[in-house]
Image (cartoon, rainbow, N blue to C red; front, side, top):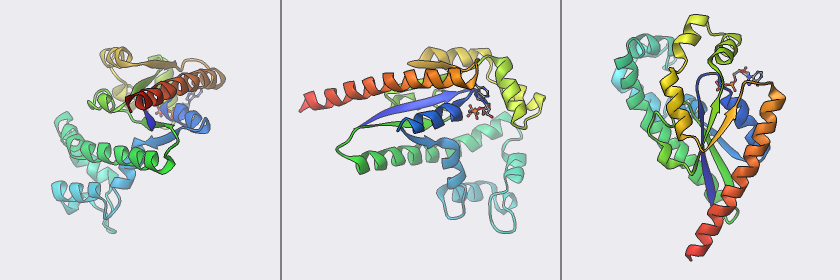
Length: 213
Ligand code: ADP
């Protein structure tokens, strides 16, 4: 049995930091960005799909996907970016769900919390795959600052920031919100409290399953 948690938030809101802390509390975490990177490896379904759609021109000499070349073609316009998303997103969803299921089977009969960290959970229409949605929310100023510290230019950071409407939609769908405007200690404290709540949810879900039989 697994409590499935979707962990989401805007760019540089602090998702990975929350995911790491939850992993330290014993949650099983799947990072959607890592899944994408693995799907892009030679011989993987994402690589096949990209080569088929965009041709050899987006590969380097070794046959690996060249992110720069791919971006130039596939992220040139919002429509193009949408098309790339439509191509890759179903593969990412299938693979993350497969990993959760595999882990759930492996630990049986134990119950655990499985977390998927991904930018596109609500916008990607996959909310229904999760028992609980956790949103990491930071005010736009701290988000942009953190993104710049991580190497993005200010323009790029501001361009990729969610619009206020997207932020509102995310918050509306959240079961739990981590507000990441303070320091790391403050965030760790909130994650500890979140973990306690998720354990209670896990227990409730387990009890539900037992009472069905
Ligand atoms: P995301 O996964 O949402 O893109 P990260 O967790 O990678 O965001 O956080 C973005 C950057 O900000 C990272 O370098 C991270 O270490 C830093 N960071 C996150 N939360 C805090 C915080 N509360 N105080 C200081 N730095 C933070």
